[in-house]
Length: 186
Image (cartoon, rainbow, N blue to C red):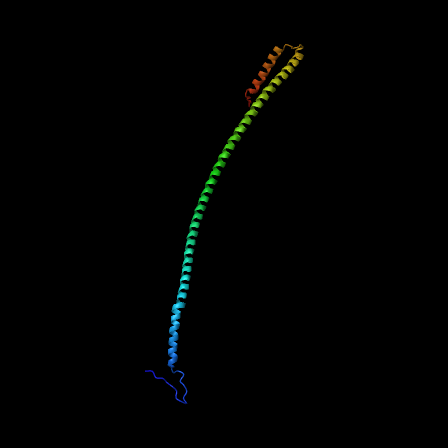
């Protein structure tokens, strides 16, 4: 049982003694405060908590989707890079093959051109040689006829006979120059 300690006259009040009207008023006030918190403040706190949880969850989901998109983009980029490298290697090989083929064609053309120039030069040389031989025969023939006429003391004006003599002389000279010369080492 609870007894109220009421100070008697001349006594001082005990500071630790309970004042029942204050205790009851405090309990009623606490109940009202609890009711107000339950009806007004707690639902707002829960709503704010739910919003923040949803926002955080949505942010996490967005971040996961962004990460998936970034991973997909990275995979696509990596694939495209590999394809580009493969294509570049193929183009390099193709260019190398074409370069080799072009070099071979240019060498063939150069060799054909060189052969053509050589053949043309040889033909021109042969024609000039034949022309020089003809001129030389005519000049030698004229000189030989004049010289023979001076030696013999008569004019060798018969061209046909002079020509035959000159031709025979030149043929003999050519035959001698074509024969292999042997050296006698005795």
